[in-house]
Image (cartoon, rainbow, N blue to C red; front, top):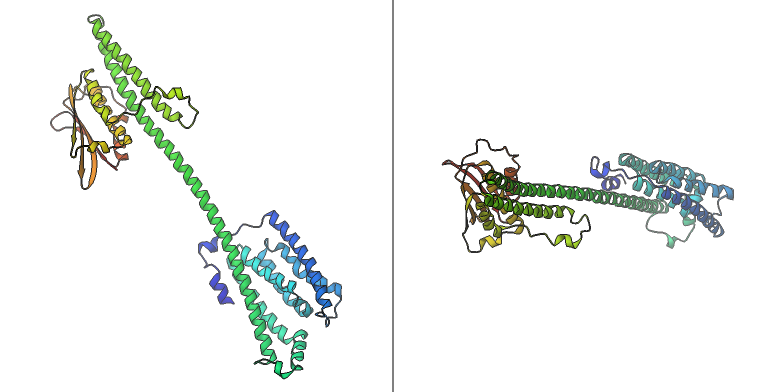
Length: 448
């Protein structure tokens, strides 16, 4: 039996041995009490039926004492889940003591089932598995002791052997009565004990699996919430970059045109009026773009009026780069735009999110030229190609100016936003002055 126990109990230090099964709930304790009372009642009826069949004919103890002893054997099961190991040890002692005191009662089915129920409960509910192993060893030793005492002291077995010896010779087995009885009882008890241990282990491991599944479900829930939180943060950062690009571009244009209008307001009113019309147009575009971005924040959170979406425009993409370059000429910056494809139609493979990142990179680059450079011309080039089996799209902005002496200091968010956009698509960014003068922003985005 110890080998069987060592085989099926978890190894010391393993995750299973460290886990403690939660104690019984009040509902389970209440069911245990009710169940024990029902078993005592059924056992009393079974005892009287067996008495009527003559099974208790040799027993001379008072009937009330027999019922009391049987109830004492069953009563500890009320605490089988709350104090599993203690109940198992107590019932082992009761099984031996009461079995030797009134041997006929030890043959009652309820008497034996109660004992094995305590063993099952100990294996299924014990929190400390080391204590359980020690307690199970004690139980195995107690079983062996009980078998030895039953075969040597109990009058029940003496009477059984006498009845076999007085019987017909042809009814005897291949072994002598004492050996046959000893082997038979050993096999039966090993089967009962082994079955109780295995069923108890199965119950305990099922509880462990349920606890692990519940923990995994809780972990998945926490991870899902964390992923959702990160997604919201990343989306907010993306929108913050979009807002920065939109505001920086349009406000820069408005500032340039407002300054030009102020300088020529008295001498050339028609030029000032044209500048003011440009300011009006750009401000409307800025409001429209910001409304669209703020609408992204609102979508899914509030029930929007469909009419609010009517004024929104699609996000800009590669097809809008030419218009972006032409719009810079109105601000005094000549921009030449070129598209270069290694394979015809290669730029059509660019997805909408990537196209938006390319557009915003171009917009930020041109805005920085107007705000921080003396350049009067720039070259905007969009390329598509392949390197090492990986397709890419590249945007390069080059100007011929020098940094302004009194240029307003920027926040740095624009160029940082360019780097983050490129990194998002597993690409590379090259930003800095050119060796022969001017400034270059080159961003290569990888196609998925």
